Length: 231
Image (tube, rainbow, N blue to C red):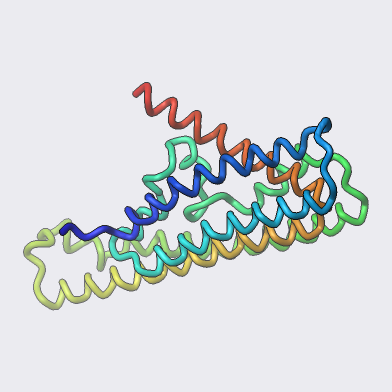
């Protein structure tokens, strides 16, 4: 029986998760319709349900990444995403700061206090993005370390001595551990940023934001699928 990689397992989960995600976006759109009469309690319940659904994605992803071997690289350029989705990848997912751009275009009734709170969150998010990107850039540079590339270029992997091969394997294991840590930290920042932002908004505003984010995502995904179908 062939061994199923963590990447393949997650792809299967993602396809099912995506169907539910589209349904929830449709519910958000329904609640955001001015002709629809809903109570704040109903709005809050839907927001909670949507965030729990998104949290499930990151929990499953974290479990898959933790046991990933060589397929850890798939999580940085996921085969389950379309070509257009991959254009906006930031350490394997969306850049947390995108949330604030979506607020600007989707929520127009923020109070002065909310604006101040969101600006504080935005600045902290930007600071953490820079820190993570600095560490990730250093990790990317390590891929070009002579220890990893020179032996292959000079004599080929099949002719490495035992000592060189051992160093190579050790270096690759370190690289994979660092990549997993980078992904973990980036996903954590994505989740924390969305949670903090939603806590500042009232349920109606949160629905507008989450709807805008979901519709933007599916437009991007659907466009990518259409392009790939034509190629």
